[in-house]
Image (cartoon, rainbow, N blue to C red):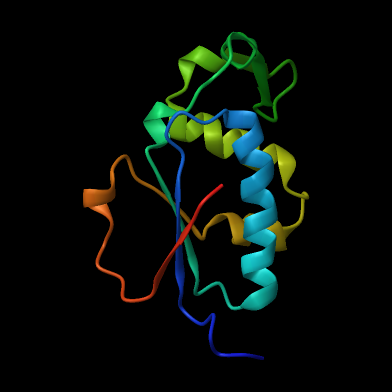
Length: 128
């Protein structure tokens, strides 16, 4: 295993990008980060999450869940969620339903502007 990717943070600026197109790119990047370093020490930092372009189709989509009780089906529309939650739901829908991919999802950190990035030594900016 190479150590050059150990504990690295990757920053992606999502300003004025389409949420669906960015989600597919983010999944590829997450899997690449994991393949380089399978110990979950790298972080994927998403900036300007609040300025993503969200289509009206996603805002009017019904997101279903089940409470576990008979007749317990519930739904909310996309406009009931804040943008980071909507991004998380879209990414979780695109990941495989394995515990590995759910743990991989925990490496994502969403912030609204670059001033809020925590002090991390090894940052790489990804232009997508």
